[in-house]
Amino acid sequence: MQKKLFVLLSLLVLASMVLAACGTPAATEAPAAATEAAATEAPAATEAASGEATTLKIYLLDYTPDTIAWLKEEINPAFEAAHPGVTVEITEGSWSGWDTTFSGFFAAGEGPDIINLGSEMNTLYGENLANMDEYLGEGAWDEISNFGPALENAKYEGSLRGLPIFTAPRYVFCRTDLMETAGWTKGTPQNFADWKEFASTASVIDPATNSLSQQALVPVDAGSMADWQWWLLVYYSLGGELYKADGTPNFDSPEALAATQFLLDMRQATYGEAVNAVGALPAGQGSVIDVDDATGKSNGAVCLAHSGWAAPAFDRPIWENVTIEPFYGDPENFPNSKPVVLAFNDWLAVPEYSQNKALAAEWLKLAFSKEANNKWNETMGLIPARNDSQYGYVTESAQLQREAELASQYGVGFAGIKEAAKLSTIMQDALGKLITEELTVEEVNAKIQEEYLAALGQ
Image (cartoon, rainbow, N blue to C red; front, top):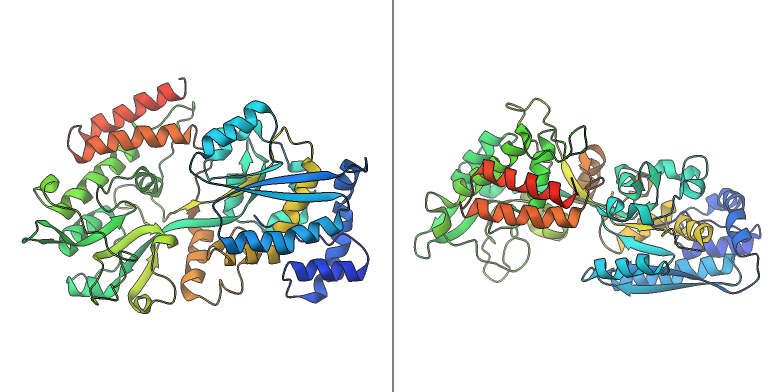
C-alpha cells in the first residue's frame, strides 16, 4: 500500500532526495508536495517529540523480493531522513498461518504498528484496528479522494482503518480461436442459458481416457467447478446480497438458490451425463488458456474465470486471441443482474494497540503517494488501488489497461463479509456435497444458511 510521498522538509535538497527515492517522474511537483507534507507532519512530530529513538514496525505478507527491496532501499530511507530518530523495521511473514500470528498480536495488545491484511479481514479484525479518519480521511488528507473502490476494503463501520495496496479482480478470459473451432459464435456468454450451452458445446471428453481434454470454462478450480469465491461472483452478478435487512445470512434467497443451481448446471454441462465418472482436465504448464511451448497444443481451457495471476503472461503471443470481460449475471431471469469482477484488495492496517498511529499514517502517505502506489504495484504486475496511479506500465499494457478499466467500473470486493474464514469452510463443505450429488441445491443452501447462522452466533 503506497503512501503519499510526503516530502516534509522545506529544504529543497532533502525534498529532491525524497522524490528521487520514490521514483517520482515529475520534478515540478516537488514544491507542492513539500508544502503539503509539511502541513501533515505535525501529528507525527508531536508523537516523536520525546526525543527517544522510535521504531516503526511493519509486518508484510508474501511480497516479491523486488517489492521488499524497493521499500527498504527507497521508501524507508526517505521516511527516516524526514523523521530523525525514527527507524522503520519491516518483518516478512506468510499467508500460511496468518490468523494465528495476527490473533497473537491482538491478544497480547502489542506488535507491529502496520499489518498486512487481506480483502475480507476488515470485518474480522475491525474492532481491533484504529480509526484512522483523523489522519487519512477526507479533510485530513486530500489524496484519499484518488483511491478507487478498493478503499471500501480498508474500512470498518464506515471509518478508515488503513489503505489498500492493489486490486486483483477475477475476470472472464476467453480464447476466441478455440470458440471459433468449437463452432461458438456468440462471444463470451452473458446469461446463464448461453453459459450452459457453451459449456456443453466447447467441452471435449477424450474417450480414450474418459477425461476432459478441453474444458469450456475453468472457474477458479478446474476440477470441482464449485469454489466458494466462484459462487460469490455468480451471486453478486445476480444482484444478490449476503445479508438480509436484519443482518441474518441470505442463502435462502432466490438469487442464492439460482447461483448454486448454476454451479451444478455448469458442471453437468461440462462433464456430461456421467459427471462424476469423467476425469478432470489434466494439469499443464502455465495458464490453462495458454499454449504449451513444448507441444504447441492448448493447455485445455477455452475460458478462465480467475484473476490475472492465472492468465498468461502479458508478453505471450496467445493474447492475440484472448478477450477480457466481467461476469454478466443472468439479466433475463434476474433484472437486478449486473456485470461484476470480484476483487481481492490487500491492504495495510494500523492496530488500535499501536503507540505510533500518527507516525504510521505518515509512512502510509509516503508509501501510498501517486508515484509510490504505481511503483509498488509495478513490482507485482497488479493494478494500483489509486486511480491516478494507473499510468506507465498499466497503460503500456493493453491487457492491464483493460483490466484496470473493468475493475474501476465493475469491481466488487470482499468488504463486509462476516467471519469470512468460517463462511469459506462452510461453503466449501456444502458445495463439495453438491457436486457429488449427496445434497440437492435446496439442501446445500439450507446447510450453508444454518451453519453460517450458528457461526455468527445468531
